[in-house]
Length: 482
Ligand SMILES: O=P(O)(O)OC[C@H]1O[C@H](OP(=O)(O)OP(=O)(O)O)[C@H](O)[C@@H]1O
Ligand SMILES: NC(=O)CC[C@H](N)C(=O)O
Ligand code: SF4
Ligand SMILES: [Mg+2]
Image (tube, rainbow, N blue to C red; front, top):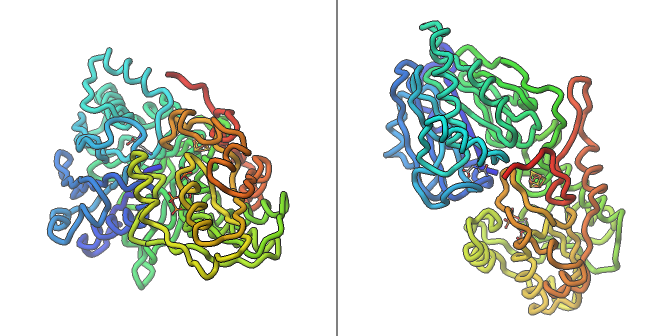
């Protein structure tokens, strides 16, 4: 996943002092996409060879404070990144994004969400062409490839347009396969770019003051991170390069328009925030539909429907409304403990699950519970929760999972690179039931998930609709090169 955010001050807007705060607020709103590290890069819009940089490990609130944010007081163009690592050394400080490189036209910084399926090959090519890399993160490669494209095109440039690297971006990014949503900073503008498969989300919006005048323009992984006084202008289209400058937002070009679409279906299942709009639909609505579809596919007699907080609440509500069985929360979630799945290792995932939940015993005692979760991936969560519910006196616990079994690795931005770690890749449904200690286990079908996700998408004539389901079906949207 990873969360990426960028903001640029509009022409004529009064002060920059709140711009860094907007960027930090944006990153905070995207915290659910990555909690390992965060970083912010800011340019004053004039000096092409200087940026302010602040990076660190941990949450946005751990890294930024009133004191250290003051360094961005003159910044008029900022981009930031929250990391959930899929490549490179997780703990190394030089792997924290955004990546910043000096190029022939000045500094360029990039914030990348996704994972490059052909990173190994591209890395070898770069190294053999004398490009030095300082990390083993795929995202750094993008920064270096952009720098190289800028160098190759340097003689054709006009001196008054040094911040405009749209041509170099088009050349570089169309040569890279998937997966990327990218926010790029030059000294006086921002680019928001989505890979031609549209694998990761990305949107742009305009912030207005109380008189309706535009004060800044934003690019964000998800619409939930746009400030409350912003309007979502549009979701960046698959393969589109969008430029945000002090004069507004404009679409630069469309790369590879014929590519099949492969928006990550797991953004709907788990990653994205309920209040975000993806492909024109609110994520929460889709999750509720997944729950309803699951109840249409299978209903069992029970006293109540509960869920594993947080992400599965909408699916549980959908299941309850379709089945007529009342929804009753059975678990308290400690809101000071973050998401467990996006922790960088199993020890941290398990410790986070152990700290996170408390059982509402009176709701549970003697009850036949349908327990809904959005997914079972490694099985860490369910193993712990079912035991807790049984120990609290639940008569039966029936698991209903609002996505199909995850059986195949992901190489496009989610840290599940091996089949060995996936519960459903190694066990039958009956073995999973036994492993987690439940009375029954049923999953939403692939067809049911796809229908629920695609039901509310408005078709238009320019773009088709298509989702990656590779971790569920083994059907990868592109040739994998290792
Ligand atoms: O089978 P596992 O490997 O445990 O992974 C699946 C679980 O992890 C996620 O929850 P998480 O706690 O990360 O986030 P949430 O609070 O948004 O549900 C997801 O919602 C499932 O509950
Ligand atoms: N999950 C992501 O989007 C990861 C981005 C990048 N591949 C990294 O590891 O930093
Ligand atoms: S393999 Fe799964 S998690 Fe990865 S991009 Fe495809 S749907 Fe998303
Ligand atoms: Mg969960």
